[in-house]
Image 1 (cartoon, rainbow, N blue to C red):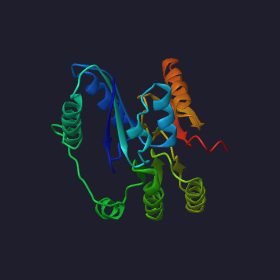
Image 2 (cartoon, one colour; image 1 turned 90 degrees about the vertical axis):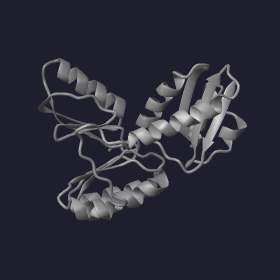
Image 3 (cartoon, rainbow, N blue to C red; image 1 turned 135 degrees about the horizontal axis):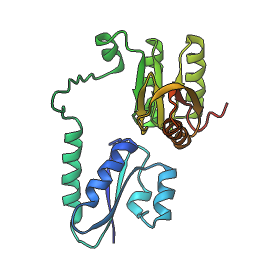
Length: 229
């Protein structure tokens, strides 16, 4: 059976979604668990694996779809309880780790005025505005979010060019900036070789091969899959 859980107005990025899917699969009676936002592309993926139920088909792009392949009736409540636990755990501070939370980009810059890189992972319809705020503060932007209107991407990159800043994304899954791996990126050695790529998986593979060959990465800049120039 395919059981579908719908969570309205709950955005999860793909990194957390994959982690949560692995944890849900550990529940007794669940063969597979797929967590995706209700975009047309994600619905087509669900259709390919036979998990596009009427509830999933009706979901909007701001809705989280949880598709469970299971032999167990009533598993939804157990799965929802685990998901809530995972969501709560994702905000807990690790031992010895200092963390600070702010309610807006502006509030974060008030507290950390010299920040020069902002990572954005919100629903696509809101990502452009948050990226614009970051650019106005003089920061480079890494937009993990997808489903950002093309006109917003063009406007943001033109603004960034005027300010001498970078906009990586939308839909940028991997980068290495200043020796820090961002998004779904492996840790690699620093070195003399730079990469610019529209394909996140391609960027990652090349960077790892460079590392294994004994060289290192100076910067690896993802542009987002629509920006081939």
